[in-house]
Structures are given as structure tokens and as C-alpha cells.
Image (cartoon, rainbow, N blue to C red; front, side, top):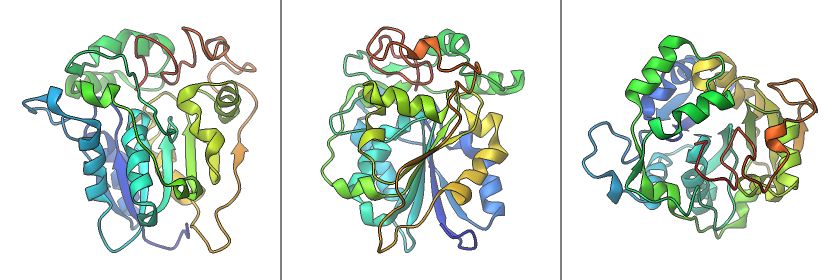
Length: 287
């Protein structure tokens, strides 16, 4: 993406969050001259009366509505928002100039966050202790943690358990950048190759770049300046010759521990897989 061109950027937050989660990043992007739209997906409003009635397709529809307009869109999805974002891209490939995936990845056909989840909604409190133990809250201040906990909204259960249907393989050629935070880009790629289902999209995407931003799972709060620089630094336009080939920009070590890999990543099909993402595990631990 040409750094001199004003673009329309749509920011989609992950589980439990509304548009407010992007406030600082959105302000920085607008300062660069970009039009920015931050979304609160259905059911994530603080006063929503019936979260149990909200479906995955409701989230997809909200993203689709944000893609409307005269200019192509750079779509930025955080964490669990990867699932509805992938569907929206699949349905509107021609509207997407590029994508940025924040500590997450585009998903494959049939993917669900947790098909076995039961209940109308998943509250943050159900995952708080695990997130703290895993280091997901790395670099967040006490004030940020307090705000997160006080403003978090339960995630609609339908969004957690429903699977995607993807039909347009052109989505695989949309320029995509994965921002790897709690673990390195090398780890992301290696564990995708070892069979982690939520990272399977890394193996099929044809225009993918992985970049490191060592921090916790919520870099929009812990590293907003660095995250706001990602769209212009890492995204590239679709050209008649096609998108750039996949590449990895990363050290071959765990970005948190400094070691070659991390023991929580060593069992891609086991009960304690990657701590930066819920991958073939129960209970659901990273959104």
C-alpha cells in the first residue's frame, strides 16, 4: 500500500471488546490521514438484551456493512474476530485492498472457535485467570487491566461455536500481514506446519507476511504506536502481476522467553497447545 495514499481502514476487535478498544490506534491512524472505522460487533454492546440470539453471521454482516463505500478497504482483525473477518473477505474479495491480523490468522473453511461451546455467552471472567497465567496481559498497566475488566462484555455463544463456510479462493491472494505478539512469527509458521487447526490458514494463503511485535495479546493497548504503523509498513496493494509471495520476518526464537520455541507450543494436538491462541484445546482460552 503506497504510504502516500489515504486509505479506509476498518478495525474489528476480538472477543469481549467494542470499538473503544481501538481508540488510541484509531487516533494515530487518523493522524496519518486515513479514514478509520472501528466496529462494535452485534452483541458486544454493553446493554444488548439477548446475546444468546446473536449469530456468527450477524458479526459477518456488520463487517460487510463497514466494507461499503467508494474506496477499497484495509481490514484489521484482532484475535477471535478472524473468523467473521475471513467470511466477510471471502464474500467481498473485490472490496479488500489488504488485511492485517493482530495475534490471529485467517481461518479455513469449516473453522469454528469452539464447536462444543454451550451457553448463551462467554464472559471474560471465565478466561481471566488463564489469560493472566499465559502472559497474555504482558505490558498492560494496572489501569489498562482495570478498564479491560470493567468494560468487557460477554461474547455471544453462537459466535463461539458456529463454523464458517468459505467459497472464493481469491481471498487467498489478498495481501495479508499477521502481527505476531506473544509468540514469534517463526513459531506461528512452525506450529501451523505441525497441524494446529486455527493456524491452518497460514499454509493455504498465497500473499502472506508475518511480522513480530513482541508484547501481549492486546497490542492496541500495550504497543499502540507500533501497531498503528503496521498497515503502512507491511501491507501492499494487489497488482496485475499478483500479490507478493509469502514470507516471514522473524527470529527463530520465542519472542517471550527468548528460547527456541516454547513448551506450550510443543504439543500441537494436545491439551496445552499454543498459549497465544485457542488451538484444539478445551476449555477455550484465547480469543
